[in-house]
Image (cartoon, rainbow, N blue to C red; front, side, top):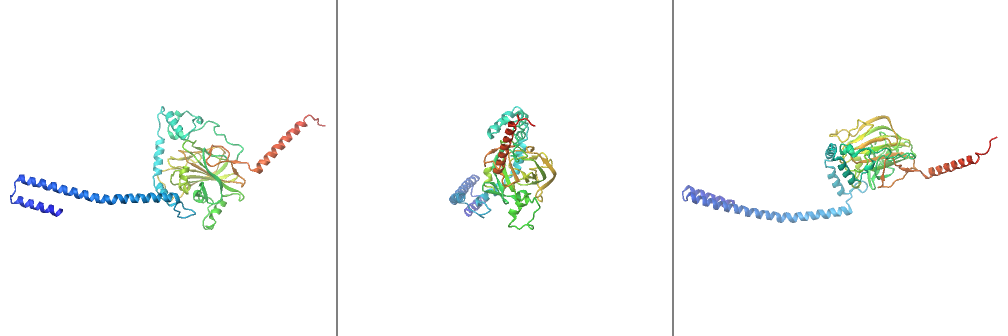
Length: 421
């Protein structure tokens, strides 16, 4: 085609040079030549496009069907890399893509948006609409809705006096309002964050007692690390995980009387801690940003952890003013930031901190082996609610004491009219 067009163009030029054609004839020939060239190019382009689509469309459909079939197969049967520790390959791909999302940036943006001051006239309507969506109880709030300048202040709203009575007959109470995700004893470093999904306790807390791999054999590290946390070898380590939904009361309290020794701030990701996401995200608690307060209570060791999450603007702890979460930049060399407390005393039920949106509390504490949770997975729990029930021996002892007390009182009333000599 190019050769033909070149030949025609040369012929036309030669004719013009020898004056064999008039200007009008030249314009007509140029017009016919242009029309033929355009038509030839259009025809060839259409043919090439058809040829490409004849190949591309069947190939695309075939690949899409293969992907859909493979996706369905992996979803049903799974593709295990390592039976013991690794999740499905499909989940690995999804988790990797999810972790690459700029969730820290979006969380800071959301924190900024929720900090914008709202018009006073719109506050009751907007907060009421939010409460209806997320089932927040407005009757518990101490202040009027118009008193909260922005959505963040509504998240961390203060409740009425005695809205959360603290159980006096329990030595360990709930630190927050929320949903019980998991509870139970901890026997190794592989701790369940939800049923069937685990996180690594050593990564989660760090080396609390400065243990190293040289001191303890790698095979026994899982058990020895847990045992090293216990103050009394006859006790057990227990955990409680509470998820705070957007409609919950976002302040968290002290579960018992205890002393704080030090705090560790782990920079990390801000992945969602919703229970539906936890089912697919192994070791999520060790990946997310978190603040761990380590100390002792009457039963022994205790670690109180507030975990960050997507759209959580920040975590505030009232006794730790130096704490700053969800910042713009973390040094690559910093594994964690540690602050020492001179045995700061925190009372049971005392206000401890607040989330700038819903997140998760993980409570790890040492207790006797007969400690029994009075909870169910998935139940709603409130601040100050007792976590345990009396063991059989303790309940029997209490009943015996009550019976002796009743008998003593009856005997005293029986002998009250007798004169003493």
